[in-house]
Amino acid sequence: MSDLLNRRLALLDQETTRPLLAQGLRGIERETLRVDQQGHLSQRPHPAALGATLTHPQITTDYAEALLEFITPAVPDIAQALEQLDRIHRFAYTELGDEMLWSQSMPCPLPDEKDIAIAWYGTSHIGMIKHVYRRGLALRYGKSMQCIAGIHYNFSVAEDLWKVLHQAEQTPGDAMYVQSESYIAMIRNFRRYSWLLMYLFGASPALATTFLRDRPHQLDVLSADTLYLPYATSLRMSDLGYQNNAQDGLVPPYNSLLDYMRSLSLAVRKPYPPYEKLGTKINGEWVQINTNVLQIENEFYATIRPKRVIRSGERPIEALCSRGVQYVEVRCMDVNPFDPLGINLETSRFLDAFLMYCALEDSPLTNPEEGEENGQNFALTVKEGRRPGLMLQRHGQQVSLQTWGLELLDKIAPVAALLDRQRGDTVHHDALQAQRARLLDAEKTPSAQVMQAIQAEGGSFPRFALKQSQLLAAQFRARPPGAEELRSFHDMAQQSIAEQRHMETSQTGSFDEFITDYRSRTSSQLCCEN
Image 1: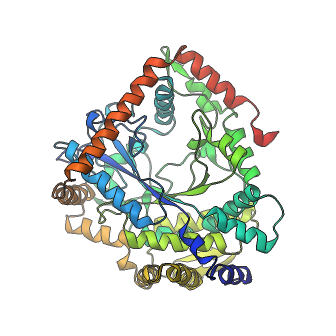
Image 2 (image 1 turned 120 degrees about the vertical axis):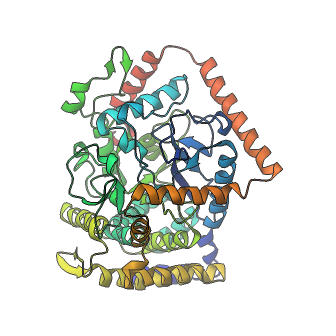
Image 3 (image 1 turned 45 degrees about the horizontal axis):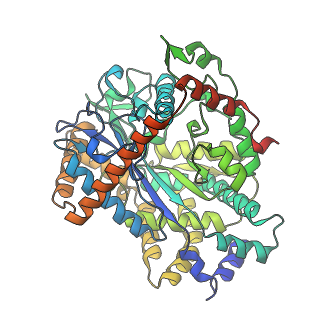
């Protein structure tokens, strides 16, 4: 443990400062496919009774029309977010009819690409640009990629906590600058250590053969309908998932928020010849927002992002430029098929301790060489994380995954202890102990448990996934929401539909004019470059 971490823990372990540990916010975004009773991708539009995907604050879709996304409010205790996520699931099942939610990160056996519907958000200009963006993703990556599901974990530290550290350490700069750079430092540490999350929580070691569409691969054949790697933890986070060579080297080492913003600002303006060949329109229909490396900033694939809640009509990068980093979004977590919500409270408590450690620990500036090392450690863990004796690289020296992982848990332990003292219990300590057991025995990891369950179903990933999805569907249907809760969700759905209808009827001008104006804003010099 570094001297800086020791000093910060001592500073925060006081009666006046300890309450700040409970004032950060947590939120979860859970993605899940709608499928029929046979485990086939739903061909139906988004259920109207769930509300309008453009304007509903808690129920929307991600890339494919059948890929639901459930969003919890940001709350101080992750247990509250999980309770709300449970309520959303239970409500959704009252309106899904004979459909159910797919329990895995990797999709069900998929139909032909032409039969995978892209998410639709209505005819308003804002709704259409969201749809066109997804058309562009389909062109660039294929529609199968738009059916992958994950868990996004949103995490913030209390602003007053950053101010306490700012004052104690006499860091140069105003409060907004110090907070933003502190989050960037946290991201540097996350990228150093996020391989550990993939070992502990990766849950996608296998996938349906149809997912790859006859693309070349290096996976092993487990059965006629299943491909896998014997020691994989998360094929979703491997190069089989959302990856794109056009984005290679896009963002330099995370040494400042300014560097990050400049890189994204450039990428949304930099033409990319293969995309230029596709064009922006086919037969008069918009098929992508532009032909640049990124259509918008959110297309940049990252395991973690610095974020700021945006205002109406504001671009993400503009929000960061004007008001700094507000929270981080962790994007590498697989859906755990054994957890009804895809993630449980124990996992969430560990994430809180892990992320707080990344925030408080010393975080030296990085360089491309370390970035390459971090990337290789991550890639090795998602494909071979359970291999006995697996070696990673730390500052150019080999170290076993198990040894390094246990050392990290020892360093996180004082942070977990402080979080527990603030709460008056041992939930973070207990979560750490559960992960220690996984490091000592790889068979206790979710990826190993998934493989055991697949083997029990004759080596068939689709068969296991269908069985698990049916089991979880029955559990949710056995706990329908009460009348008041149901009325609240129905009111929210109706309000979202009314909001979308108002947007569609009150807008002016053509969509061509709207998207042209949007692209001109993209190509203009943003504040971070002034």
